[in-house]
Amino acid sequence: MKVNRSIEEINEKIKTGKAVVFTAEEIIEVVEEKGLERAAAEVDVVTTGTFGPMCSSGVFLNVGHPTPRMKLNDAYLNSVPAYAGIAAVDLYLGATALPPSDPANRNYPGDFIYGGGHVIEDLVAGKAIRLEATAYGTDCYPLKKIDTSFRLAEINEATLFNPRNAYQNYNVAVNLGPKTIYTYMGVLKMNMGNANYSSAGQLSPLFNDPLLKTIGLGTRIFLGGGIGYVSWHGTQHNPSAARAENDTPLQPAATLALVGDLKQMEPRWLRGLSFLGYGATLQVGVGVPIPILNEEMMAYCAVRDEDLQAPVVDYNRAYPYKEGGELVRVSYAELKSGSITLKGQKVPTASLSSYAGAREIAAGLKEWIEAGRFTLTVPSAPLPSVEAGIKLNALPQRDPEDREVK
Amino acid sequence: MIKQKIVLRFPPHLVEKPTIYHLIKDYDLMVNILRADINPKKEGRLMMELSGSETNYQRALEWLRELGLHIMGLEQQIIWRAERCTHCGACTVICPTEALAFNRPEMTVSFDEYKCVVCELCLRACPARAMETLVDNANSK
Ligand code: SF4
Ligand code: SF4
Image (cartoon, rainbow over all chains, first blue to last red; front, side):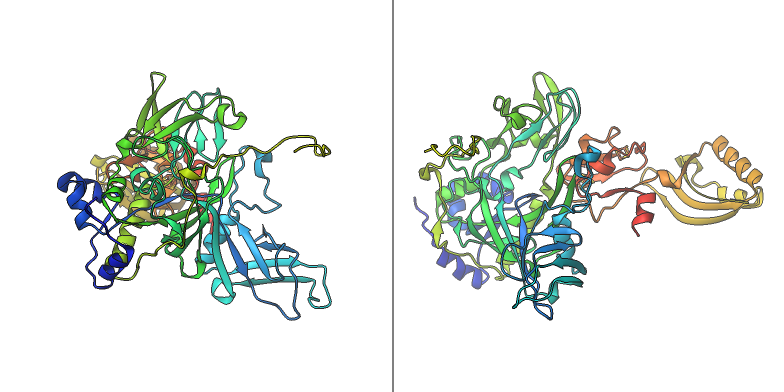
């Protein structure tokens, strides 16, 4: 390889306003026009983006001590329960948490009109959040009950910590069954009435660095409209998934755990969502810069929707009951065209993540870098990739009394 | 006395007719206009509150229908709250009339209320809850 650029060199160029940056969408044409080598020689950074529902998201809060002090035991934020099993006034609010009064799917399909994701959106928007909590009371933390309200600016910390975001590829969901089903992939009409997908494809962060050669622990990113960091590999991280010749996975594969200060984020990029018949969640905006260290990274970033394949999976039987695998694979170019052909039938497609949002995030990150406001980081450790040989486990279902299990 | 909020839809050739004038003059109704707009296809929409005697109100509605106007109760209007829409596109496969449509290559969603048949399927299918009826809207404010 002729190009051999370091992150330090790129940062020098960013600081002097000379870095050449393109989004993962724009770069496709650049590479087509200039060829891989010249593009790699000229371009320093490619920015990516995605703006989709990410259930494994939430926020750690330290709400500060009331007087007298209190060890929160049972805590609700706008009636949504927050996990209080950590230090006294620390809480974790998960995106899918629901108020105990929510009828959920007892009124099938449930509306899930307000859950953890919506509280997070309201928090970031600066709205007052009602905190109701009880405690058993201790000598050091005597207060047993509180009903108050606070705004984001008034509490100590609010750290967005998302254990699993930015899925590298995802299923395309269809319903082979005879009636409408309500899933985390949206409303799926009977007999393949629609096919819903979720990845931003060519703009999606992990499709542009398929083997995690540049994204690692501590990579600085765009998160929820502010700055965040990659803090670990995400839960269910599966880099061992089958891959195409261009190294991109053919199934859901790598994931990222992300962290960032909620106080500098924007409600626009952290949106509470209500999935009919499924639950509440959070739509998260994520953008990752990919340093063009060499021709190899340039080739990865030039990947097009045509070259990215997603598995089509039946969410009526195959997914919930693990009966059989994927039906076929389709490319993101086909998905984005508005319809795919399955078993000879034309099936309309829809996305759950916003491609327009992904575009805006990638463009925003590009602007930050061009303006010298955002520099790149050298990861402090790599994330496990293909060579880690990770295998996804299923939960053992056995007699819990059986002590002989090895 | 009757007081009703209604929505009138005008085909292009009726947009410039002095409809309101006649409602006031010929049917002795009080007219309070809540919203009025004309779309790019020159179809008009008028949201208004009418009050007057029951007989006059009914006669006026009959006259409007004969004119070729489409009349709906205000609560039947579907609103797309553009600022809440994330342009995902999930609604476009649910909407039976393409009132909610996906635009390529912009990759954005647009709402054409003239195509909307108020089936209300999108209200709950939109995860961002960007689709509302005016009634929801009034209740949530
Ligand atoms: S489903 Fe809702 S948020 Fe998504 S495009 Fe339709 S109206 Fe907008
Ligand atoms: S109410 Fe029905 S026709 Fe109107 S936009 Fe919604 S889904 Fe489409």
